[in-house]
Picture 1 (tube, rainbow, N blue to C red):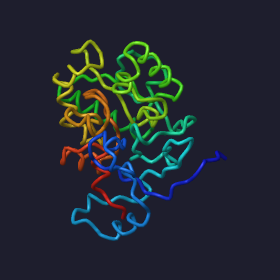
Picture 2: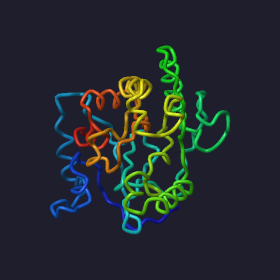
Picture 3: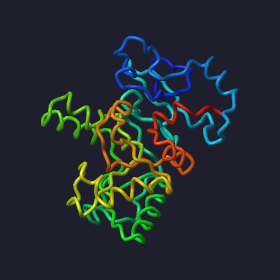
Length: 266
């Protein structure tokens, strides 16, 4: 069994505030969005007026501290919150990865990035089928990504752009949503199958932005929310969270961080 340095008895609620505050750069943030157990118990006893803003405790991150970093102890959680603060164990790999039956930008190659967790893969198939009925042709580009593969990508980006710029566009190993098996980068022929901001202005990108929530997906890194997510705008990156959460997030124009700032434990 993996030995952790220490276990933090906390339920994670990441505040939807400026990313510099989350990193403690302003001097007043000591928790980085973690709620002490005593406060969590008090808040969970107050039922919000909106039943959509309650979640079972299992859907909140359980955090352990490993070598000074905050590591997620329940990575199989479908609502797992992975970002620059909360990372995954280096050896984590979902056990239910399958290859969705959709069109891929790289054709029929059976490779790592063509996989998603089963529930997310089924939802992706439904979303692509609905898009096709509306005359929209989508292509999956990159799904599951192992820790090792993420490390190679990050190191390559450092060589190309430097470490500071690399951290804005590529997650460090362990802190990538792709390792969860719940995220898929999506593209189209209209942008030559590239992953570019231009995709957000295309018919395909607009369709996804307005309809992905109906199938349990959210636009994970929207424009104008960079100070909350810590990442640049990525109109191609869609994350599966399930229909209940996706519809609430879409309705309020929230990020996943902001969603967890508003929900309470059942």
